[in-house]
Length: 111
Length: 114
Image 1 (cartoon, each protein chain N blue to C red):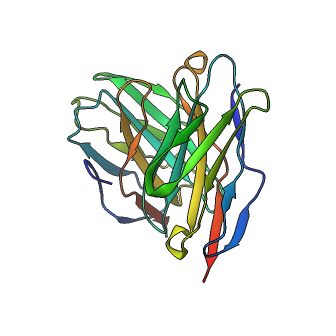
Image 2: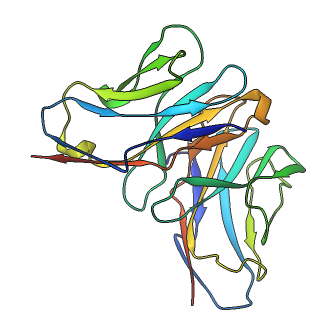
């Protein structure tokens, strides 16, 4: 998990509420990614950014938004439009086509 | 579209015995293949990768994987499993034709019994 931090570790959301998950890296990586992991399933890509001030939708972007104003930071907002947000969220970063380094994750639960 | 299949949801092995976790892939162009391990409530840890060169790749913690182009497989192996190897293992593929996005398999849970 070294080099990438995610906060908070646990997050609880009420119905209709937007919440923001933090992801910070000090690896000087250009690319950053957000994944969602559900029990018994693999990781699914939400959004990714290959450079500051630019990002692309992944496979399941609906109900989520991101920003990339700084190289080190890639926050993810889970909006009220995401109907089933309870999941484990993982942030990662990489250089080019090399392996991705993952943060420790944030577990989001809808109350 | 690229895809990864891990046909076994769980693999059980006795400590000291060989461990194999299977992975097959489908991708356009040359694949970049990766194995990751995940312990409970943690992020993924990188084990090894194949990009080009020797088909047998050695990685962390005594793991290795063999790239087989004709069978489109990239099976993970360890000659002698440890109880501490019990975890969730993910195979992943990346292709430039798919916009450099990483696609993960569904994961295989490994249980090593003492």
